[in-house]
Length: 356
Image (cartoon, rainbow, N blue to C red; front, top):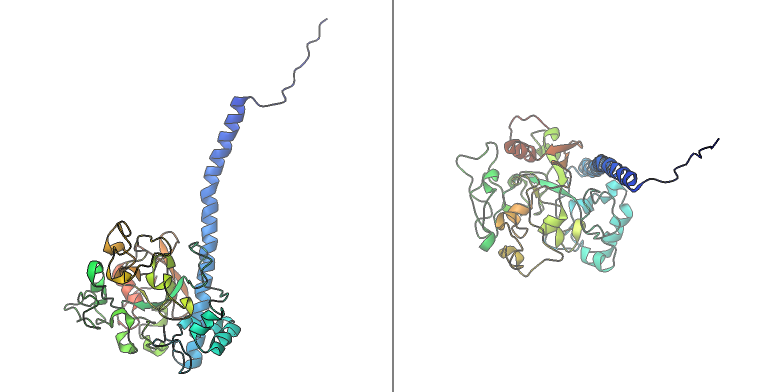
C-alpha cells in the first residue's frame, strides 16, 4: 500500500502576503488619527498648564505690588531707572522659580547687555506650546502674550492700509498717520467701550481696553470691573505669523514681543507664511516689500500688516487656549460670537455675558 506523504507549507504565497500587508496598512491608517488626537490632547493639556502657571505668576505679582506689571516698560533697555524695556514675562520670573535668571539679567544692567553676555534668552520654562513646532531652537520666541482686548490698531500706510477690524474697537478707520486715539464710532459697533489708544502705545490705563499693552500702562485687578472670571488675561500666539515676535531684539524678555494680543481680529485669522528670515527694509509700510508672492492673499492676510497680525492664534484644531484674570484656563472655539469675544477681552465694558 502506497502512503501519501503530507506536504507542509512553510511560506505565504505572494497573494497572501499582499493581503496581509494591505490589512496592516488599513489598521495603521485607522490607528494613526487616534494616535495624533491623543498626542494633541496631551500637548494641549501641557499648553494649558503653561498658561495656568503664567497666570498665577501674574496674580502673585499683583498681590505683592497691587498692580500688574506693564506689558512692556518702553523707552530704554537700561534698568538704571526702574523696569525700562522689561516685559511682563520678565518681571514675573521670580514668581515662576526663575529668580536666578531674573537677578542675572538685572545685574547686567540692561537687556542689551544681557543679550550680548548670553544671559538672555536663557532656558525659560512655560515659553512654547508643544503643539507649535516652528523654529523651536529660537529661545527668544514665546507662544503666550498678554491680552489688550479690543484695542484699536491703526493700519500701516501704503499697501497695507486696509482697515478690516478697526470697527470692533469702536474706532474710526485710520492709518498710522491718523490720531493716536481714533474718534469713537457713533453708533458704536458694540456698546460698552470707547475707542482706545492705537497699538496700545500709552501709559494711561483709561485708554486701555484689556490687561496689557506695550506702552507701559499698568492695570490693577480693581480695574477689572467686569469680574476676573469674565476677562481674558493671556492667550496663545504663533510667532511664525506675528511680526512683533519674529523680529524683536530681546524676545520674550522685553520690547513688545509678549504684550499685544488683540481680540478685534477673529481667532486663528489666517496669515500668509513668510520664509525665514523674511524681514525687508521698512517692511511695515508695504505688504509686498519682500517681492511678488510674499503675501499672495493680499494685505488682509499679510504679516507686514500689523492691523491683522496681532490676533490670537494656535495650532490646536478649532480654537485657542486662554488664561483669565482669576487664573482659570479655557479653550475658546474659533467660532465664538465676535461680540462676546470682545467683551471677554475688555475688562470694563459693563455688559452681561456668559463665560465660555
